[in-house]
Length: 247
Image (cartoon, rainbow, N blue to C red; front, side, top):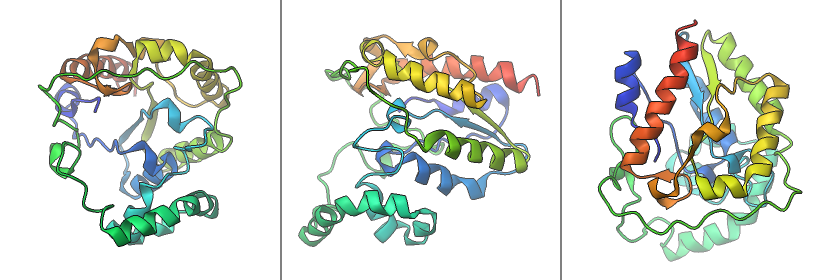
């Protein structure tokens, strides 16, 4: 809900696939799932929400309950990408998942905006374009003890090597974040940025450059409205142009 892929494709004359999915599937799964499709000459842009990089109880790095229907009903072959630590995390959600399955609720949500028809051919979520923005609650102020997910840096370094071995390139961009939430979360955002730099990961823009006014967010502090999407995409194009032209 943050990119106009056609703008990117038109700017670089390259096909674009937006693989942005629910953070609760887990960054590990999303990356492992896309790896087989990376080919020589590709440009891979990682732009996850900061919650995927932080060590939190929800654990958007390992995965949450939303991953279970993918593994058991939608794409069961994808179980091969799930390691023992991920299964341990997911096991906490199995009772609720099983109950929901029995009640036939989990797979039959009420008709609404969040469904497969909300995406365009690039993978952009566009169903909310033109709708009035909701009141978006900012993220809470950091307490000062937040930590980067301990497995994050080794995992991303391995992903970086995989991409390089394929003859492709990896670039990391900050996600768009509501200004109030950015201020509240500055402590952990700084920690994440420093961790990336120390590890030599290709973070090609400063997080503060992707802080955006609260007025451009639709229903969540990372979900942009149409105007916000266009502004954010222009920033993406600007920063990618600097590195793509050098290679």
